Image (cartoon, rainbow, N blue to C red; front, side, top):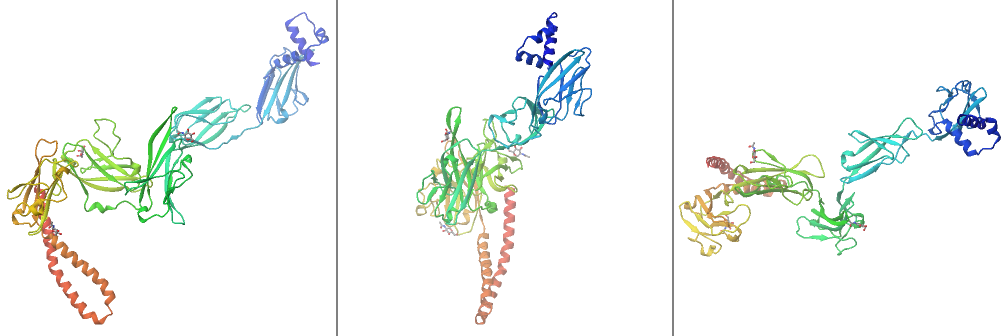
Length: 613
Ligand SMILES: *[C@@H]1O[C@H](CO)[C@@H](O)[C@H](O)[C@H]1NC(C)=O
Ligand SMILES: *[C@@H]1O[C@H](CO)[C@@H](O)[C@H](O)[C@H]1NC(C)=O
Ligand SMILES: *[C@@H]1O[C@H](CO)[C@@H](O)[C@H](O)[C@H]1NC(C)=O
């Protein structure tokens, strides 16, 4: 009945003179009928998630509507003015219904019929009930550090839009599929991303969290010892798109290394790992010697696609400490390395470590700190020098040396594998002319021998000649042809195994006489320099050296003695002899105390003389 009335109304509206009765007599196609009815229901179709509500109405209203009948998908009818439960309610003028707490039973075609006396109109609404989505969970997302234009898909749901908030940044609204494109992936995007999804059939947005991790390409290095006492070193690349082209292991104390190829062995050194294809690089040492328990450097050659081209990249390197020995302790503290630097020229200070570094810095004798940076411009005052921090190289080059740079420099190195205290080392810098005395003060004793050594600063450069002037103004010109056999005045000769060509100007004196004590001058013309360069060396008498030796032997004796005491204590037969020995030792310490005092006095005078200089 209802469809016929509806059609009547429509045709009544369009063609005033057509009567309903007439229409109902003529059969009409089902299609038209549906279209007509559907057009009156609002909304014509709706997706709704369980638990939500649906609002339905007729698009047209009758002027004097006296009933509004709702027919649910099961055919159950009621008038909206007397709903069977609180689930249903009128929500609008005209013919409308609000259906609360939608369940799957509510799915299907709902009809609304408004009547006004004999006239009535009907419309229907197609309701599709969807599963309720309270939460959305998905696996963590792993990204590659440094990648550009990475598209990150955040949801597989059929959402209309989403709002994405990355950690520490403003949220952004994305239409359609929930994905975000990162210009450049960095570790700053790591963490939980908050996402709000606009889903069909649900008013409240679904909140989701996606955990994002950013993987950085790096070498995983280490070693394994197995029960067969073999030593396996490994240096695998993690999180990379690069391919391995070669794999090399070198003991840092050796100039040569091992070219390790997967599947290859020479009987004592073999490939270790799961293959280059899995970015693994390792070496097995079948019978490690004690020398193998040291520091190894691994170098991994890599290539990657740049555009469509395969390009070789800088090899990745790392150090492996097989017996993790901490830094060469302050062994150098007593006698720091000295580097000789020519004023105004550039100079380099290096401090190397046996473990990989993440940074290093230097302290100037005046306390200013310098952290070496990459050389990028010609005007730069200082820059990093060395192969790379990961192989333990820490070096700094300054463009110009000034006399202020003279003194004790400190370098501090931050190990890569551990936090906490930095490693330190000291380097003595001597800013000199082109020719410099290796030792400015040389202690001698009368009748002893001595060597006065001058050499070029800033590395080895040839000398045009080499001459010395004694404190008594005896000048002599020497080179390696002057040997002990043909010594000048039978006492002065060129120090064997040194070379003018390698920048050495070195005088050895056989038996020191009084006349040799005082200020000596060495002089030479250094290759490429116009003027002669000189330096002075103070030769002074010092019997401290002898006293040192004497004292050392006494201490050695008494230490040896205490061991002896334990062994011998009960052996009465030797008792007398031992007591006699002990008495002698004690006696000999008396003059030694004198010597100590004298030495303190001597070193004090040296100090003052150096400050006078
Ligand atoms: C890396 O190796 C894979 C597998 O052998 C190959 O498909 C890919 O093209 C290689 N890429 C480069 C950059 O060499
Ligand atoms: C220390 O020396 C450096 C290099 O010569 C200089 O740049 C710096 O100003 C000096 N600092 C002080 C405190 O004198
Ligand atoms: C110099 O003297 C030391 C001991 O004082 C001695 O060991 C060395 O052999 C001497 N050198 C020469 C060249 O005579």
